[in-house]
Length: 144
Image 1 (cartoon, rainbow, N blue to C red):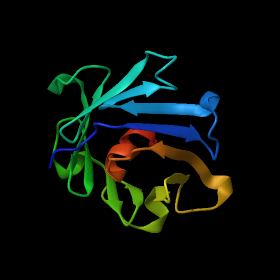
Image 2: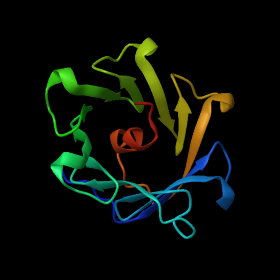
Image 3: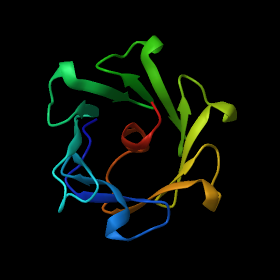
C-alpha cells in the first residue's frame, strides 16, 4: 500500500484555526514545524508508508514503518518493535487494544489525548486535504 501524500494538511493546536497556532504543516509528504510559509524546519518525510527523520528517505533515517494496523519502530516488522496498534480511529501503545493502552483518539478531523473526545482533551484540529492514515498521523503527533 502506497500512501498518497500529495496534498497539504495543517494541524492546529487545540480547536484553533489561527495561523499562529499551526503546529505542523504536511505538504507533499514533507512535515514542517508550524506553517511552512514561514518555517523551513522539516521534521519528517513520509514515503511509502514510512516516516523518516528530516528530508531523508534512507533506511538509516527511517523512524517508523506502517504495516496494516501496526506501526513499527524503524524499518522493522518484528512484533517486538510494535510502537502502536490502530483500531477504530484509536491509537494504542504497543500491541494492545485495551482501553488503558489508548493514547490518541481520532474523530471528525480532530485528535484527542487518550480514549476521549472531550474538548479538554483536544490536541489538534486538522484542516486541508487529509489523505494520511491514522497510523501516519499518530507517528507525527504521538508520544513516543
